[in-house]
Length: 283
Image (tube, rainbow, N blue to C red; front, side):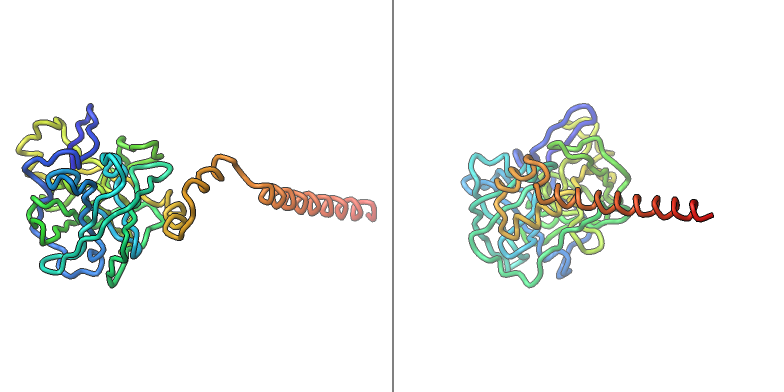
């Protein structure tokens, strides 16, 4: 992932590939939680560019970072699933970007055929979380998926794409998030609770040795606010129609229901008042 300075924001970690990437002494192995974590290539025409991480949440859908897909000239690319000798590649034919936040969905032309798919969390994570990143020049190369534990430290100022909030997450035990890990999921309680958006360094072009060897920090886009949008897109809803409905505001049916509730409340208030008046007159 491209680095972010405290004073300068450089998004689009998939636009260039420095010599370092996710480093960790631990790997996912056959953990069920990590099976849906995939490597994303937003442009198959250049093998050295456009690499991110994503997570399969449905046989045809992968969640990743919005800035990854917006780096591509046209929708397309591919995702690579599995580890070791069991890896397979599936073509992507379209993507959808969330109304807010550094979140996007990729659609594959074929069923990815995984035994399990990740579930989207409906709560913002806190405390300890798990992280996976598929940067091919990291400690796992292109065959072993590095993993790490991390801690949500609070809010980050790097809330991209009009997101209401972003999270500041620190990796444990010297693990580092770097190029190719953008879009990777933050897992909390076994669910996808956020998407890695941007790494944090004081100087984005010259990170110090101390920064490189210490626990890295990463800005994370929580997915809870977009959980309904994600569910609707994966379920087959038309994103354009969803956006139009959101802009149009509440439907007349909802307004009528709201008026009905107000009428019930008003009626109850009137009945209670009349009852009190009757009791008063009877005294």
